[in-house]
Every structure is written in structure tokens, then in C-alpha cells.
Image 1 (tube, rainbow, N blue to C red):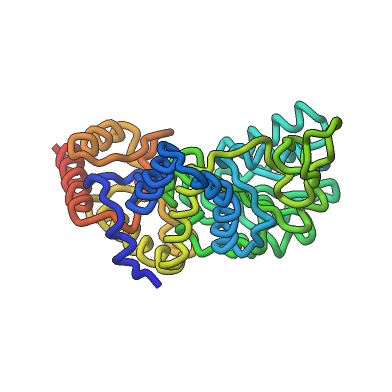
Image 2 (cartoon, helix red, strand yellow):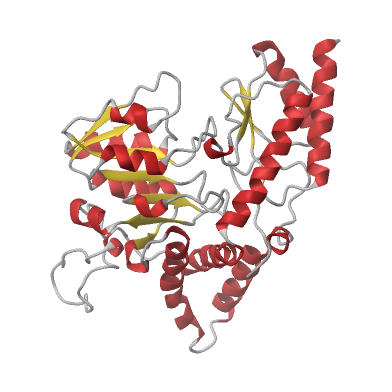
Length: 374
């Protein structure tokens, strides 16, 4: 078992970085694994490259350990969007989702609907609020076969009630875009049927890493529309003809993934599993509370939820429209990295966010407060 302090010590990003919801700087585990695999490729010593073939099983086992799925229910993907495209193109029937979700979800639904005409998006009107079990329940109809949600809303930071949503949708497929929570949220993933996530944000594995996980129910109901030659039930593909896709999640793969990316992703996930997502979630909650306390100290409006059961790692600040530029400039001048979009400022710390980062944030807020009161 790795302690949370040991885990945090493996990261050395520069002070002031508070944008993990966009991309997480790599830690020691990812970098060392990358170097080791690249060195193996560089030398290509006799027999050594065979180990690369084992990285697929390794990464699927690592993902499965974190979400409670079997390894054969997981397939490696280069990003969240690819996994969601596979899922949406495989659905026949209505899918209920909000147009305000992270673009990967609505884009996948619309592209599938426009291309195959077998999926029908049903747009959920939340009246500007979060996607809750009650809102979903009121819009369910017999034609809806699946409900798609984000585990954490990328704009508001709202943490979805996966258990409540599962209760109200019954036997319908539950599709979860886990991008903004995987690795830091102790969610009941086993209640979902389709889970897709990338590894470049909170798990800090870099671009080119991700997965798609499918429950047995999802595998029965989805069609692997894009299924390549790498995963069939026929071992010898030198024969003429194209065999059907493999049974299981492996069918949702097009070609050979990069074993180096798989190894890097696996190494990071194994480290997360060693410390435990609950420990990471608890430490992150402390960091988020500190950011909120600083915002309150300098009278910055917090638009995201303050309740721990409704938040993950994202804090959204919404200053007056004529004060947004002042806040943005103050953050920039004090070396604080954040995302500014749609009239809001999104801050997202991690377990490794240190005192120097909080000092920089305090200085930026102080500068902002002084500027708007002059």
C-alpha cells in the first residue's frame, strides 16, 4: 500500500498550476515507464519486444481494477471521444442526454444519428441546472434505450449521482463519460454499462491514453460498427475473407494501439490503485475546500457546488462581467494556470498542489480584490 503523501511526492509540476481538468502534468511513474519502454524499442534486443504484446492485458487489468469491471470488458482507446464514438455508433434507439455535456458526448450522438439513422438523440432540458435523477426521470419515454451523462460536468464541476440515475432509468443502458472524474472520484462505476475516459487529465498519463468499458448487458445490446482486424475470433487472418468481430469489448478496436502508451497508462493506474482512489479523493477534497475558502476570503463568487457530494476537483468562479478581465490578468501575473471560458474561471487543483501554489493563488486574489475596490 502506497501512502497518499508518497503518491503526491511523485509529482513535481511548477507552482501555480491549477488546471488539471484540462491536462495533468506527468508524474514520475508515467515518465519512468515511458523512458523504459522507449529504451526497449530503441535497442530491440533479441526477444525483448515480445513484452510489448503483454501491455494490452496489463492496461485492461489496471483499468478493470479501478472500475470494478473484468479485463475482458475493457478495451484500450486513445481518448474519451473514440470510446464514446464506438458506443454511440453501436446503439439502436433513443439516447437521452444534455446538449450541454462535454462535446464528446453530443458530438458522438449526433454523428451516429446522422450517419446511420438508427440512434435518435433526445435532448435533456435542464434549465441551466445539473443533470439529476429527477430531471432524467421526467423525460424518460419507452423509446429511450440509453441515458448518457458526464461523471463530472466539465463546466460547472457538478458530480453526477450515478446511483440515483441508475435507480430511475431501470434496465436502460447507462453511458458515463468519466473524463473529469476517473482516478479521483470514488464512483460506483459498476452501476454503469458504458464507461469511457481519457488519461490526460486527472490520472496524469498523457495524451494517447484512455479506455472503453462495457458491461455484459451493453455487449449484448451494442453493435461493434467499427471493428478492425486486430480482434476477431480467428487466429490466422492470412485466410481469405473477413471474419466477424470478436466477442466482448475487444471488438471495439480498429487497429493495434501503441504498447508504449498502454504501458504508460497502466503504470499510472497501478500507482493509483496502490494508494486507493478514496485516499486521493479525500486529499483532493481538502485542496478544493482551500480554494473555495480563499475565494470567499476575497469575495469571489463561487458558482460551483460547495457540497462534497456534488463536487470533485473543479471550482468555478463567476465574477461580475466587468471584473473578469481583472481576475484573469491577476491570475496570469502571479503565474496561476486556469481555464477562462464563458464568463467564468475554472480552477482545478490536484493532490500535489502545494503551499507555493496556494500562495500564488492568494496573491492573485489579493491583487484582484485591490484592483476592483480602487
